[in-house]
Image (cartoon, rainbow, N blue to C red; front, side):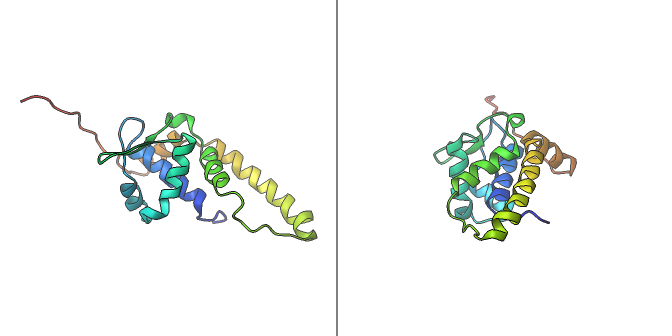
Length: 149
């Protein structure tokens, strides 16, 4: 696999998890997201904060709080998710120098980056949820509250 398993991929995992398990009406806890993804809760917390600040996620505080999508699944592209967490992390990477980098590697990387970005722009959370269902994953059933006595 050419793409690294870094912040961007973890952010996509978080967003797909929220879309799959909570959508826009229910809530899912950060601990549940971390557990399902096999990640440490404290490791995903900065990403949850960045996604919430951007409006991609809504954060609800309190003992029964958690996260839900900030917009409909069909309106959130994977490229937007990646842009949010990459821009939030801007300036922390070491930048290569030199003529070889500037003349050959950087222009080539920009073309590859644009290709990946356009492919990701074509994918929405709605499509990723469809793929999860197609892979046989089951969405949780949210039981309506019964007020009968």
